[in-house]
Image 1 (cartoon, rainbow, N blue to C red):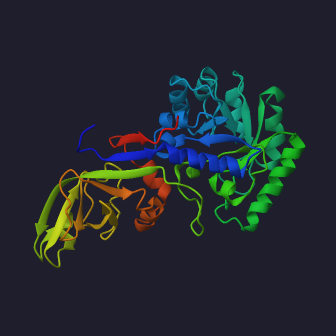
Image 2 (image 1 turned 30 degrees about the vertical axis):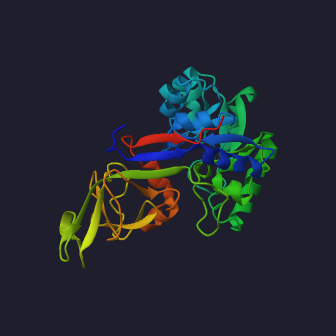
Image 3 (image 1 turned 60 degrees about the vertical axis):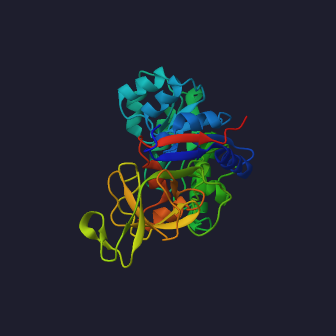
Length: 352
């Protein structure tokens, strides 16, 4: 680790807290923890190790599952998008992976391999899922011993009172009862909103990382990632001087500036506007000028004692990642997933 590297401090005790909140919301359900996209940018192997008591893991890509298998994890691992080639099916067999079938054509790739399968049914999301007139034939092509159950996904669970939630559940239950299979529908918003928590499985994802899936109500979660960057320069500019590419920001008065070693190549979005808050030693600072590839500049108070080597928080304990997403016109998911590999992951709070 270099003193010039930004770091993402990952609180594993907060992860455990959030995992426990999922199990408390659905005490009779098994937990399939979603650790796709490198555990939403938090580091899949370390996250998987911290929640080894999950009943299963879920990922999006075969390579993500292979990484877990090569690291010694023997949990059931589900490929949420299934496989779409015969090579993918062979790899799933070689690495003992479970697959989701969401389209009839996928059956063609399973002819020469024996894989455990979930059936994803369309209930209203209209993204992936078998239609009503497809499910009987697809399920019939898979031996009963290899049928794991039914999946679907709520499209409006972030609005717990939305009438579509009940309509989707009713449609799901009709097929679950007909095929006599266990099922699961609930991602993070549904788990926290109380939809589908009576089913056999839940699939917590973003909530594990302490990010609130609701925009209008609080959630009992703790932030897992704190993104920090070191101060590498402190200087002052006079009134009228500019900062950054394009000279977009102009100092109105004598201003003290700190340069941080983080930029859009690290995953801090170039779209972050001037005025975005940063915290240094619990003191307020504000982004000024355009974000560069490797650096950004913040204005600090003239009385600030900030110095080279200090650490600044971009989001985490003092600044919520949800609010940072709103500032640059996106969502917290994209920020944590976008933290690049050159940012050090530092794991703290490991439980015994």
